[in-house]
Image (cartoon, rainbow, N blue to C red; front, side):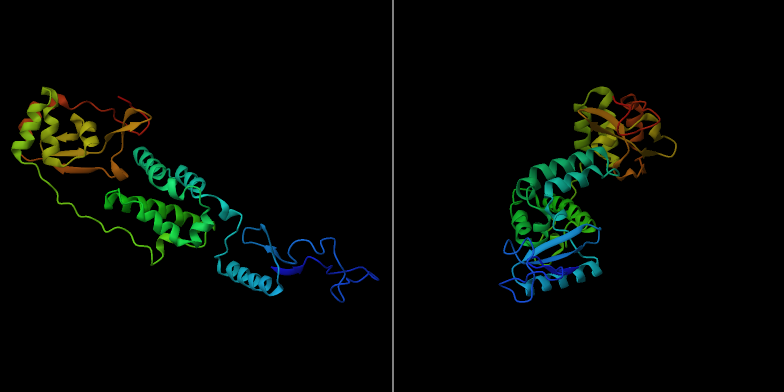
Length: 297
């Protein structure tokens, strides 16, 4: 980094006529136009840095700040920071390959419905500097359940974290101490009684009644119940293997891995095994290989 005088030549030719306004200086072609003092240099990505100032002291102060930021690894390119939150978040979202398809759809929907209307058109650099914008956005989430708001804020914070890593913004504004998140609400688990499970089983078509008992004793998610196969049940050991679920993919249904790709084995109550065996025709024969984009039903 360095500070240059735009209005005068640093290396004037011999016998050049000096400037009439500034003693001992030789005027450049830019003399008298624009701001006089320019900070020049190269950022940490090898990109040129130029910024003009009216006063030399301001230019030298900025030059010192830039040098310090580059050495500390906190330098943020002004041009890179002009990318809007929407543009950067969409880039970030498309790279989240480890997320399941349904999770990616929820992230896209949450950002589109609850983040982009307020933050979408704001440059990332501005969001890093003006924490009040983020505080006001959190205040606009009052119509969401506190737990849903916390999940959304966590996703936006992940976008900011990636932007800090990319040197798009200097800091994650959601990590600032003055920014408060809604308190989490702990909901008590409501366990169905045997009578309630039996009532649901009676209300289902005959071959599907087994799913009510399977869900009642294992706590499987809805998609996992739909994805359960007859081969998942170990009748001798009285357990069921939960390793697949039915998910929505591009408007259709498909078999996919369970949440977080963590299969588990769940014990079955001995009293329920006969009910499951009687209704086992309600459990399909699932293809041996499951994925989020194949084996559509």
